[in-house]
Image (cartoon, rainbow, N blue to C red):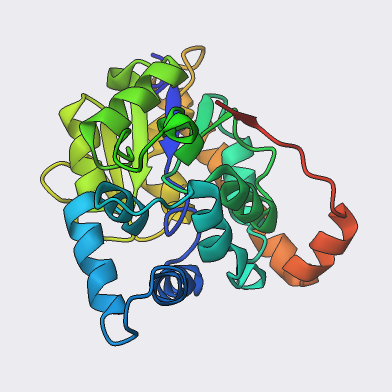
Length: 279
């Protein structure tokens, strides 16, 4: 019997690293500063405006452009992501080992821009673990051609259009694709298009989630069938998978023993960055 999954589709922020890292908080502050400094909104209204734009349009950028503000997406992302505390994101050897043990295709699906995605993956030590990156530029290829701000609506998860674009450019079978995300609305959108779904950051499943896990590092314990091999069979198949996973998880303890820090690995790796395919 083969694994039920031939592709794994991962959200990035707050999915591949903990939500308390400080990145999400930094994004919110920088968006507020953008609304104040670049759009002229009063500081007392910025936070509430950000929340309302997100609820109504899916993001602050989408809302501003829909309302007629001629905001360049690259300028916006450069401001909002350019001053983030990326040093708070640490290397994750255990997650790297888990991902590299998975033979199926692995794809990033994020609303963020490509530059931000690559920075996060580099900090995590996962820049060579994915076959493809689906990002803001993938979902919004016509935005640079717009002659007015509202000509092309910004497309982002959890819109069905965004999900359809992701499935189209990745050429996956949704019935055999496992989608990981920390946002329940994104999970619901994925389920609506036939994806198998895993809610990350929660221990209890929602109606649309097939699986739930508090951290993506629990992947091996929660969804062992990812590692099922059609050349294996019966008890031998599961035993072999279990042994393999134990070995993967055991390596993390060995890394901890030697106290290899993210900063040390960063120095060893250097600044070279192998960029996955970003369609």
